[in-house]
Amino acid sequence: MKKILISAAVGILLSGVSLFGAENKSVEKVYQKECGSCHMAYQPQFLPQRSWNKMMKNLDNHFEVDASLDANDNKMILAYLTSNAGDVKASNKHFSKMSNSIASSETPLRISQTPYFLKEHRGIPKRLIEQKEVKSLANCSACHTSATQGNYSERAIKIPNYGRWED
Amino acid sequence: MKKVLTVLALGATLGFGAPIDGYMQSLANEAKKADSSFKGFDAARGKQIFTSEHIGKKGQNISCASCHTNDLKQSGKNTFTAKVIDPLSPKVNKERLVDAKNVEKWLKRNFNDVYKREGTAVEKGDVLTYIKNY
Image (cartoon, rainbow over all chains, first blue to last red; front, side, top):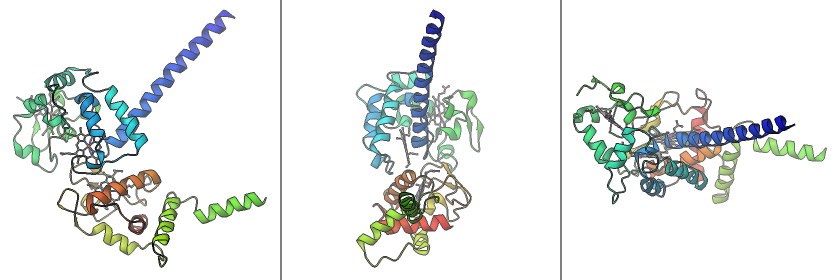
């Protein structure tokens, strides 16, 4: 009897855990779909909570395009972004360097204009950025071949019409 | 029995089966309300809406085709971000025009980007008719 109770309890615990996991996954999926349709879905760790709060209030005019969402999806995505933001969850060295480089008085909307980002990308010739395969530094995955998996290591950099980057 | 028949009849008028017909029907109702002489959607007008250039939200010349190309059976490319866009034609891409909420969301955004305003019911219906039959 005791055994049954224990295994039932374990069962409930386990299913609780996996249900919770499934829910997180589905929010992430909504994020990937909704914020990954015009550009890659940027990792939320690249910007602090205050940046996401500001951005999600103004999706009608998102970098001069309309990226508006219905109220429910907006709320769900904002919760996902703020719970994974760089100032609460910088999970690797790139994310924490990015996060630490942003002054607390600043609320940047562009990852590509944060101090750490600017420093890392200073040496790249303009023509390699402005070429049609890249267009702008916001197009991370054009050069960082594993950007969508959150891998920005130098080994995974390959710039179109140029190749590997050796510095 | 009577109930079953009414449900069947309703199903027939709303045209269940074809994915966004419910949404198209509500656009048609709205169009009729705004103008009682409305006769139905027109793919030729839709083509004009899709291919003509306008000064868009960003202040530069843009058309729907700037991102989706003039050949809806081909992949397009987002003119602002360079991201590839899968073909719009439901004849080659079975994920297109199946989710009314998604279609409504994109029409609102894309009309704003190209026309600096939301499309009217007639314009949305026309352009969807064009895309559907491309």
